Structures are given as C-alpha cells and as structure tokens.
Image (cartoon, rainbow, N blue to C red; front, side, top):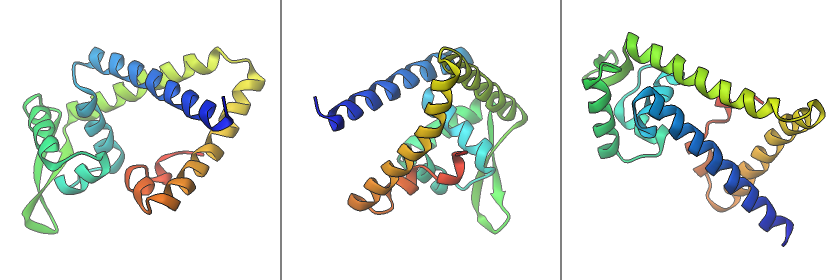
Length: 161
C-alpha cells in the first residue's frame, strides 16, 4: 500500500468515525445532522440570509428551506427581516436554538476530549500539531484542482489552529 493510499484510507476512516459519533450525538438532541449543522452555522455566523446559509452548508436552497422550516416549527430558529434589504429575510437562532447549539458543541467537545484522553500525552501533542499542517496541505491541493472549493466549504478562520 502506498503512503497516499494509506493516508486516504485513514482519513476516510477518521471522517466516518466522527460522522457516526456526530449522528449519534445529534440523535440524542432529537434532530438530523443537517439540522444540527444549520444550528451550528447560525451559532458561529449569526443571522444569515438563506442563500448564504445554504452556501456555507454546501446544500441546495430547497434542502435548506426544508431544514429551516423544521427548525422553525420546533422553535430553534426564527426568520426576521434583513435590516439591509426589507424585501429579504434572515434566519437566526431563537433562545432555544442557542441553548441547543451550546449543548451540541458540549457533546462534541466531550467526545473529542474522550478521544484525546485515549492517547498518551506525546501522541496527543503530535496529533494536534500535525492535523493543522495536514489540513493546510489539503487546502492547497484542493486549490490546485478546484480553485475556491475548499474555502467555500471550510472557512479557515473557523478552525482554531
């Protein structure tokens, strides 16, 4: 097996494992992964127009519309007029949505802390020092084949390196 094949397999396994834990965590909060991602994006970014929110999440506007409708019905988000354009609306978290966002973040942080606790301190430090470099290399390689794609889906300022 080449180093490239091993890297691909390890990253896919890592992503799958974290995705599985995320789905389990979200089920505990009573919502879909897409709804949780919407709540987390709004918690991070603040009130957003639906078009910008669908761009950030990498989903179609129709999928976002369904997610927002369900979140609105459950009391997690509200729509408000956009102060810059009275014809447009923004989606923002309700107080319940903000509490849910904090709970989701706490559950995910607890899971990550559990993962790190299973590593000896030297390996933990190595992993935390290596992952940002790997992420930057991934961004650069993505940019070489698909300009703008990486930064479109993952704003580097969101990631605390």
